[in-house]
Image (cartoon, rainbow, N blue to C red; front, side, top):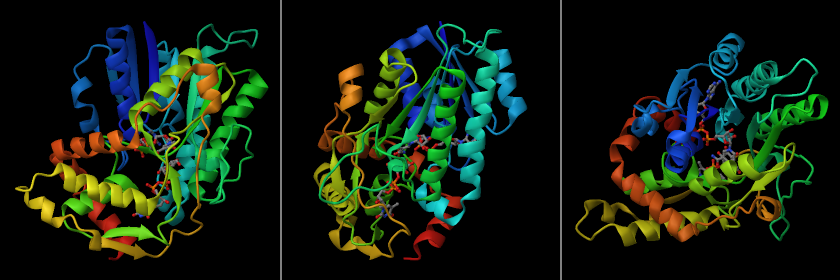
Length: 359
Ligand code: NAD
Ligand code: DAU
C-alpha cells in the first residue's frame, strides 16, 4: 500500500484531491492529511472519508519542524503532495508576512523532513519516494491581452506577494532537486473552480452573492483573463504526474479555457437562471444590475493562460471538463450544500468581506 502525506488536505483543492484518490484507489492507498485548519481549512470538506481505516487527519502547522518530523517518523511516507499554503492574492496584498512563513518556510520544513526520512547513507534516495509540489501559473507573471501562453520554460516574474512566495517555494524545491537530486516534481496550475471552494475567490463569491441578491464586485474593467480548470481535472493531473511524470520535471496544468472575469460573471448569472426553477424565490434575486465595478486589485495581472502541451504529450493528461459542464456541476454542488456555505460565511468571513469590499 502506498502512503501519501497530503498537506493542506482540508482546503479546496486538497480535499477534492483526497476524494479523487479514495474514489480511484479505494483501500490501495493510505492518506495522512496534515493541515493547520486556518480560515481556509474545513474538516466538513472531508466528512465522507473520516471513518476510513486508511485515512488519518493530523492538525499541525507545516512550519512546525518537530511536528512534521514526527509525522515522517511515525509513518512510512512514500509520497508527499504539498498543497498547504496561504492561497489568496488579495489577502497577500494586505498582509504578506504569513505568506512567506507558510509558503516559503513551511515548504522548506517539509523538504528537510522528507529529505531526512528518505535519504540513504550514500546520499541517494530510497526507491519510489516522491515529493510533488503544487504551485501556480502566477509565478510566470502576466501575459499580454493579445496572445501568448505560459510554458514550463517561461521565466519567473511574480508580481503579488502571494505569487512571489510561491515562486520562492518553487525555487527551493528546484534547488533540492539540483543540489541533492531530491526526487520531486513541480506542477504549476491555472485557476481552479469546483466544489468546496471558499467564497473569497471569484466564482464561489459570485454564486453566493447572486443567490442572495447582493452586489457582485468586479475589479477594474472586468477584462482580466484567467484560464479556468475544473478542480477534479486538476486532481487527476496531479495523480498522473505522480504516476507517469518524469522526476525532476515541471508540468504546467491548465484548462485551455480563457475567459474575462466579466464573461465568467455573466455565465454564472445565466446558468443560475437556467437551473433555478421559476418557483424558487432565489431566481428573482439573480440580476445583472447587481454587477458593481469596484477599485482594481493593486498590481492586478492582466492575463493568465497555460498551453498544457508538455503534460499532454508526456503524461497523457488533458482538461476533460468543458467550462459549461464544470460550472453547472459547481452550481449544483452549491445548491446541495447551502449549509456548507452558511457555515463558512458566518463569523470572520463577514468581517473580511466588509473590510475588503466596502460595498
Ligand atoms: P486553500 O486556501 O483552499 O487551502 C489551503 C489549505 O492549507 C487549508 O486547508 C489551510 O488550512 C492549509 N494551511 C494553510 N497554512 C497552513 C500551514 N501553515 N500548515 C498546514 N496547513 C496549512 O488553497 P487551495 O486553493 O486549495 O490551493 C492549494 C494549493 O494549490 C496552494 O498551494 C495554491 O498555491 C495552489 N494553487 C491553487 C490554485 C487555485 O486556483 N485555487 C491554482 C493553482 C495553484
Ligand atoms: O492562477 C492560479 C491562481 O488562481 C492561484 O494560484 C490562486 O491561489 C487562486 O486564488 C487564483 O488566483 P486569482 O487571483 O486569479 O483568483 P481570484 O478568484 O481571487 O480572482 C480571479 C479574478 O477575478 C482576478 O482577475 C480578480 C478578479 N476578482 C476577484 C474577486 C475575488 C474580481 O473581479 N472580483 C472579486 O471579488
